[in-house]
Image (cartoon, rainbow, N blue to C red; front, top):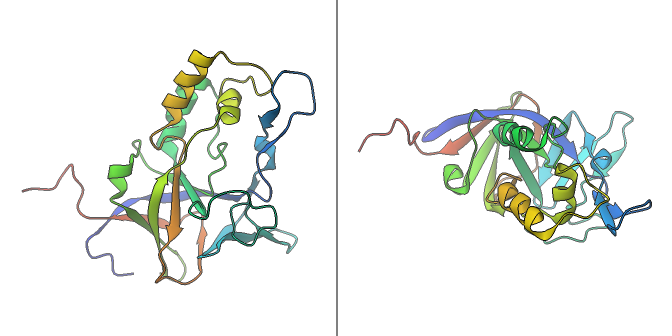
Length: 215
């Protein structure tokens, strides 16, 4: 890949899929109708990203579509949320705020990127590129928006997945998780074919480092 005006922005540290949604009916006690089930995430060796979404092959050879994939029979989401990424520094912040149960990837993002500082929409400059470490093939992913946190995940953060959280407290949590801390939604650029992403792949963003750029 010709990095040109690209600058290094981190390394992929985790990839995973959601074969089914993470918010399910509450089968047990507690007032909540639904709760966030983090155990429905599946960490994998690699992801295949196309303009249809994300899929993966499990250890036993089974092909699995992510719940956000356009061809998933249970898809219930918008068509502009096919890829979700998060950053390690955001999880550092979530662990400080909520506790050690907030392990990397617990929010269900497909790709976690190791990066020393928290990342906000303006830092991505509209897109990022992931370089396959084996082939040099590049996946250009265009930023759509940040992932809006939900009530169920917020209760999970507070370790009250089945219980009631007072409105003001819930609002504080939603605000803390917003703006990109919960993750970002992206689509693969139309000019890029299917690509494979796995742990160890390098990540780049456009333009010079704003901390070192001169005018």
